[in-house]
Length: 198
Image (tube, rainbow, N blue to C red):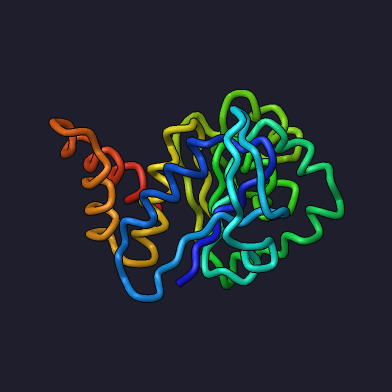
């Protein structure tokens, strides 16, 4: 089971790295989570350099793909050569996107007729791409999910785990990372947000 997190130049650390950490709470042979980028190294919006663990081609062949966000996502979406490499397919993959990553799925035509979640900055661009934006942190339809707001990455990660390994595995992953003294609150909220879409 390979989950690829698409991570581009100018990426938001919270989106890619929180999801990476939570998804890696599943300890099972063959379970692999990787940062997939168009180059060997990408730099975050705050200057953190990250080595890619997988290529875009690897991501296109992954079982699940999460599209992170960043300050250069509009540039990515406008780059025809780069976008042509993203051959994602919801009939054989779970797909998720967070904040401006939702714009990538919209531009790839993967949100046609499906409302989505994104951040307030990206909302007008997603709407311009013909996708209705909901005022909520998470939504999914069949194999495609979107989330809005940096800390909603926990919901995307929980949905991926619940779909691939079951709700109890998702509950355990969120329980592990939740703050001490608030674990039950975090787990309850995360499961409540994803349950209608499982």
